[in-house]
Length: 131
Image 1 (cartoon, rainbow, N blue to C red):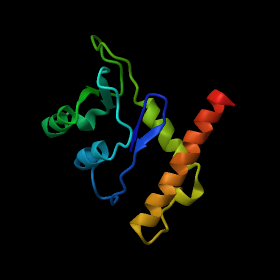
Image 2: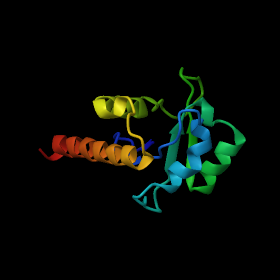
Image 3: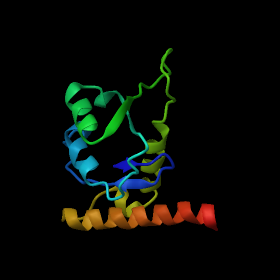
C-alpha cells in the first residue's frame, strides 16, 4: 500500500502473506493512479527494509527520492520521521472487520473490498475537510 502525507491511500497491491514488501515495490509504484506534478519532488518515506540497493534503484527509476527512516531519530538526519502515517492507514483498514481476516477465496473479491474501504477512508478524510 502507498499513501500520501495525509494518509490518503494511493495504491494497493494484494499478494500472499509469504511475500516480502520489498519484492512488490515496483508493482505498488506502478499501480499509482494519480499522477503527481512534475515540478514537485516526490519523496518516498520507507522503513529500514527498503534501504537495500535493489529497492533504492526501483525508487529512483519510478521518479521518487527515497527517505529511509529508522525507528529512532538519528542525529544529523535532515528529515522527519513520517513512518507513523502508513501505520495509521493500516489501523484504518483494520477497522473494517471484513478485511481484518481474509475469508475471500478470490483475490479480485478481496481487492474490490480493499478499494471500497479506500473509498470510504477518502470520503471520511474529505468530510472532515469540507464537512
